Length: 314
Image 1 (cartoon, helix red, strand yellow):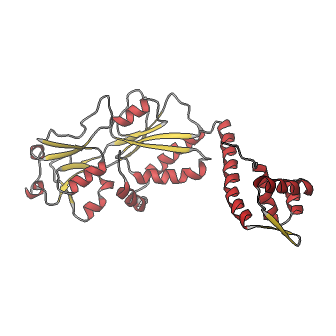
Image 2 (cartoon, rainbow, N blue to C red):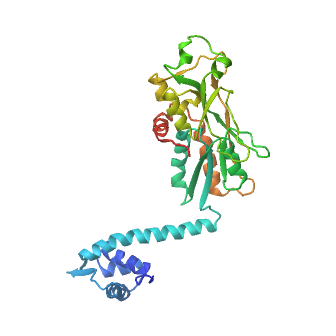
Image 3 (cartoon, rainbow, N blue to C red):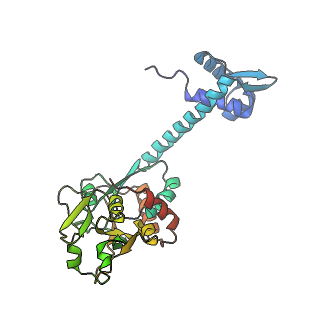
């Protein structure tokens, strides 16, 4: 594949001529001689084989072909400048990417607020977000393939920053047999019914967190699938409250009247990779995650509603 015949400097020169209306004013802005600017544009047209400008009086005007190529060249020059700026930031220790692994039960709305504010401060740093369930988060962090991790697990040997809690409610469809009993429910009542649990995405020591030893258990791959199953009347489950607000409001799902344990509130933690020094972008993202983790549900309401309808854990 042949390399480009026209350089970025030539495109910048053409842009200056068009933006300032003449070769003389472009030369003044570029701190070059007018003859140098004229030669650069003439050489461009020769290399491309098509006219880019025509002179009307004292003003340089784009041809139709020149207008289309100039429009595309602005994107090219902008991207090249961003690339150079990114290299400069990396030279100063700014990361090219932050890898974040999050337990699927953690509210998307909190992350969206943090990442929205992070974007204009990121200086081109990308975020690679990965969702896992239970011990899957721990494995990704310990494998060194994540810089930050959010989980409700206490990871041995790691110091986690305390985040907020996430409420899980024991629920079933409004017409489920458990609701027909019309009394407080015991563990024995639950064990006679089908429970829907989400598969631990970890491979080494997967856990049966929350399973009560029910006679029937259906294991699904994501919380979104669990919500769909239980909302269709297939079993009961403890589900994150922020993911079933609509179903509760519309009485599709109803909380189970358990004697105890109807609501669980696991504490979540933010962990860092101890084998990798924290760069400036990672430190900014950490502070934003902490800040928006403390937001009240009402402050996050509109975003939470959007994220609940789109979230799907791998």
